[in-house]
Length: 372
Image 1 (cartoon, one colour):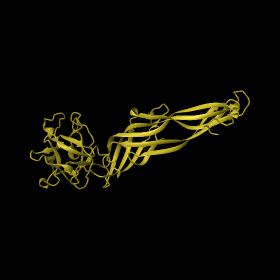
Image 2 (cartoon, helix red, strand yellow):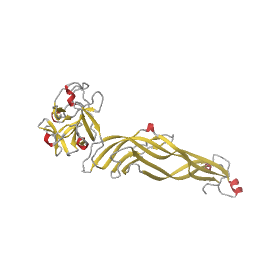
Image 3 (tube, helix red, strand yellow):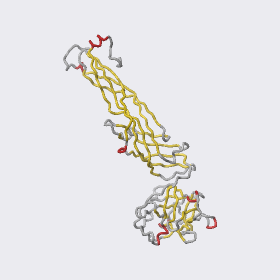
């Protein structure tokens, strides 16, 4: 059975890597000297560097928001020692909520809507982490009647300011999914007209009856369609060249009305290895037919043109990292992505009619530039 949340609490996720700052002692929580006990955690004014950093690892299955927290300095999991002090001495994950040395915690509080002011709840008996004593401010667990929005109350000892920091663990692979495009903020630029294909159809009939079926001609046109796709991010643990990326994303396109849109699911998407900022280019052969009514003893010359343009679309995404030790970090939501594409729109067919007599008088089979 999942531990209950205290009244007026809201559950939020923990970042992959973070520091904790005690609102009571005005110091950072850190891994302390051995004389204070194995894996002891306290508020020390001299703490610097990796001793301040805590990292999260996901729990197995659905665990009601609980995750494992590890002290990066000694590579040990946080746990409750003797049901009182919280220490970084767990060598392995323990997801049994009925025992004191369970290594799962969650973040159940945002004070007055400020998500940076938090408390931590231990999975064992739903107790909250607080600071015990005035000398060292050692971390402990206790059950208290928490009153959000009252920092002057006795519950102040259970309030921390959390700050997300870059994850210090080396990442070897990132899985990018749930890419969401902000279509309303898409920008189209660099428009230019482009000629795609030309073709012709002749009517050798001397009958001037325009209802004659011989007047209806199909002009076959074909052209190579080139499109490019580039996904870029401002910052990411997977932005290093040493990190393999697996990307799954839809591919935006410019639709006929000159706006950016998304095609139906699975019609146009990308799934596979990728490198941030690398441009993928694809070329496909497009065949189309244009119906035209050709007068008797005339030739219709058809030109297919379009507008080619680049476009940018902001996007957010979900990232899940695999670390060098084989573990998988917590899933995190990322912002700041930009997709850049190249596409065609505003397709236009234009037909020009020449009499066969005129062509013969000029001594040629077709006007300059048209296919024979």
